[in-house]
Structure formats: C-alpha cells, structure tokens
Image 1 (cartoon, rainbow, N blue to C red):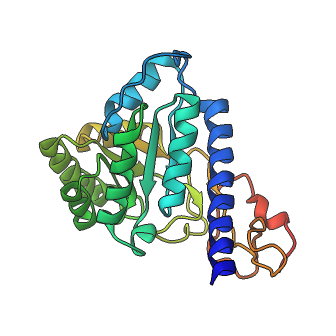
Image 2 (cartoon, rainbow, N blue to C red):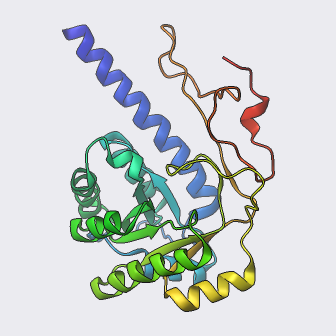
Length: 265
C-alpha cells in the first residue's frame, strides 16, 4: 500500500506541476495584468463575477485566462499560477466535467480557492447545455454562466439566451452567449459539416440587443484541439495524441486541426 500511495502522490504532483506551468505560460503571454506590482500588500477575496473582471481587462488592454478545472489538483495549480503572475483568473466547468461530481463539488473547491487568493477569481459554467442547467448553476453560486444555444436556430437561440440573461440580471450574475461555432471539441457535439463557423457581425449586434447577454462568444475561425491521451506502462502521463480515423468531432473551421497531422494510434 505504501508504494501505491507514493505513486498516487507523485502522479498528483506531476499533474499539478504540468498544469501550473501551462497556465503560467499562457498568463505571462496574454493575460498578465499590466499594473500587477511587486511587493504590494495582498488582500484576500471571495469569488467575483466576470463582468467587472472583463471590463477592467478591456480598459487595460489585457486578456483574462479561463481554464477548465477537472479536479482539485487543477484548481490548486491554476490558482498557484494566477497568484505568482498576479493575474485575475476564471475557472470554469463544462456540463461534461460536472457529470463526475456535480456543480456543488466544483463550487466548493473554487470558492475555497478564491477565499485564499489575493487575485480575483470567478467561477464560470462553460457551454451551459440548457435553461435548467444554468438555473442550477445560479442557485449553486456560480458567478458567471454561459448558455450555449449556438446549435439552435437564430430565433430559438435568441429566445433561450434572453430567458437565461433575464434570470442572470435578477440574480446579479453575468451571462455569456454563443453565436456561430467554435470548431473542434465541445461537450455538446460536433460541428455540422458544411455549416459556416463564422459569426455574422450584423447578426451579432442584433443578438446582443435582443437578448441582453453580458458577453458573446463568436466564431472567427478558432478551433479547439481534439485529443485523446495515451497511457503506457513506461509513461502514464505521456502527451495527448489524436486518432482522426476514430475522432467523432469533425472541425469544419480553418485552420485544419493540427491533430490530423499526428500519427494514428
């Protein structure tokens, strides 16, 4: 049992270290707050909403990193990187992630992290898959919610988003919506072959005006890489590869998914 325990602890340390390095690299490149001073007095805070966080970033011309957290080690690693870089951070969960534990588990972990943090931390539901899921996130204590109606018709997307945005305003929680498609891997299914992944600017303006959403995710040719991890006896944490022949996520947005150039398993 002792060797198993040591192996588990080593695996946890490896995972946290790897996540922390990746988060720090992204934050340093894109999301470091320009007025993050050294040696300033640290003030602990609780969870905040994304609305002020994003408005401050827009005014200061910097980005805010949003990172999917799959477990406690991810939460701790993301927070550690945000603290070291003195940068605000959004921790987010998808409908697929919360199937493993539930909204309340992730809320508890991120809330505890935020209360120990000296940087702003928001908890976001990413790609919320319906009105009921968003209501659950509101009641649980999430401080930001996305309703993804991008697979609906334009009018149905407006109706769905408007209802969630109205509930969010009543509870003081910002609501993100999606118009267009982000190519590649999403929890709610593959893109439709031949369908344009780009968001029409005129439709985006009309959409925001009619729904009252706080922010909008748009399709501009971006793509999320679809990967599958390989685990071997010699290296249980080897880097992900893809298998285009078995992948069920068919990205129609340029550029071509880089995973297609990797060797098949």
